[in-house]
Amino acid sequence: MITLKKIRTLKERVQIRKCGSLMYEEARFSAFDDEYIEGLKAIVNESPLITQNDKAELSMLYDRYLSSRDSLYAKDIYYKILSILGEEMADWDFVDDAGRLDSSKRVVKKHTLFLDRIRSPYNIGAVFRSAESFQVDHIYLRACGDVTSPRAIRTSRGAVNTVPCTIVDDLDVLKGRAVFALETGGEMLSSFSFPPDAVCVLGSEEDGVSPEVLELCQSRVSIEQFGSKGSINVSVAAGILLYQWALS
Image (cartoon, rainbow, N blue to C red; front, top):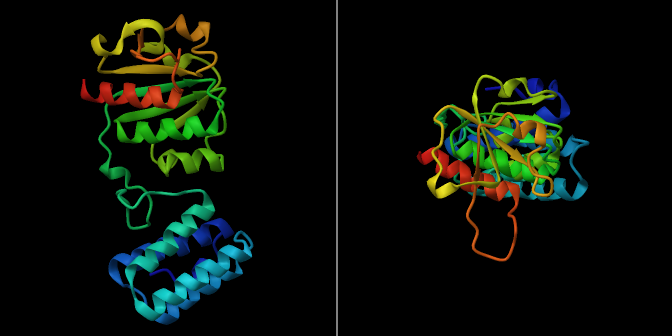
């Protein structure tokens, strides 16, 4: 068990994350005595990263847990801290002993994504979340928004820390592999033959995949639509495609 003294030597953000993950551990195993939990509460209350309102809410949750030993209050503390840090996860996620998404649960194939000028951190986070669920092994980002921004992290629900990614400036990673684009004017998704080992390129909804990247694609795939809209959000399109690719 990490000592309270040791926690206080950590960087401020790491301190708070550790206090949260320890309460998740407490919810699962009832591992700590009242004095230790009071110490965690004190560390949280001293943090300059947490607003007074959030400190008041967390203090109330700590007090409720100490008086009842109801594991739900310990989990409430954990999820509140994740929310403050912009690292929210869902109750049904598989997590490791530190309370983070458990990457050992992932099943991956040689399915790689290349994000081409996707600016919105919300879309980036949503793509990562789908990629985490649907067997993507790696994501490359070129001229995209900040994958480490709180909005991307929050939307991904922790997946930006689980799916390996690399920021690139050139197109070298596309050379020597099968490459296809999710783009208009391609073969319909329902009949598309997915390569088992390939890179799928995603562009923004507004501009699509850039011409220089399209030149490196051997094929393109499109999603059938049945409404009046001419396109769908890139993160939604990515989720539809990745599910179909995972089943192929």
